[in-house]
Length: 84
Length: 84
DNA sequence: TTTACATATAGCACACGTGCTATAAATATT
DNA sequence: AATATTTATAGCACGTGTGCTATATGTAAA
Image 1 (cartoon, chains in turn red, green, purple, blue):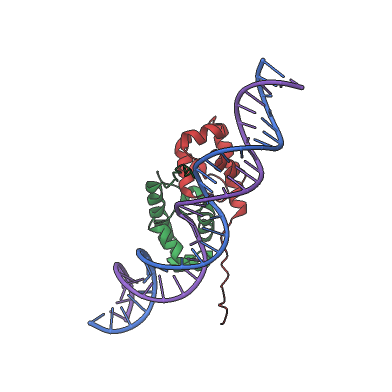
Image 2: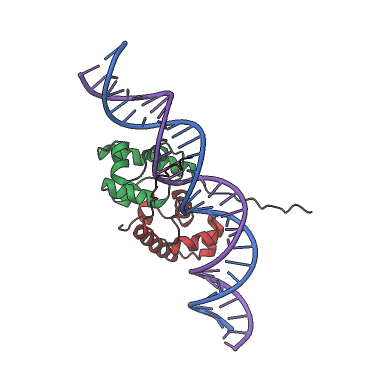
């Protein structure tokens, strides 16, 4: 039979934006005096995940970011106060 | 054999934050005069995905949001200028 | 150096974000 | 009303975010 053509799908992965966010998260976490471990425990987000975000290895969801923001007591405009 | 205990894993899904973001995205898109279709075409993000985000059915990644922000010409502090 | 703490990396399984297509529903325009 | 436009919904396949566990690498303190 005729093999069906599979259309290519390009996924969004904004490397530069993720790098900028990683740096910002690390900075704010330090400013607020959290270790990755503390932030993980208090937020309920796994520590490996926080490390992956801060090293820009993954593309986190906004739910994850909202929870981290609440835990650190930082507003979204503050957390996203950087250029992409 | 003994059935292995599978630990439960609770995933993060911040319903209220996603709802707030959905409303904000819709507002800014309208202010900037984009239809979902235009925003989809210009950003390269599928229209079904934009609809899903604006109806808070899914939990988008920050890459997706960064791309939408760039396309609409809005800064991140503006786009995230709301309460969670 | 040894010990303790902090951060990064790796591999796995599962849940889900995303693109695609098609269709339905809602809203405007004539 | 009829037509067009815009938005929402649904189902599928694929890629990947996330939690978990374990290990490695830094880094600071004793």
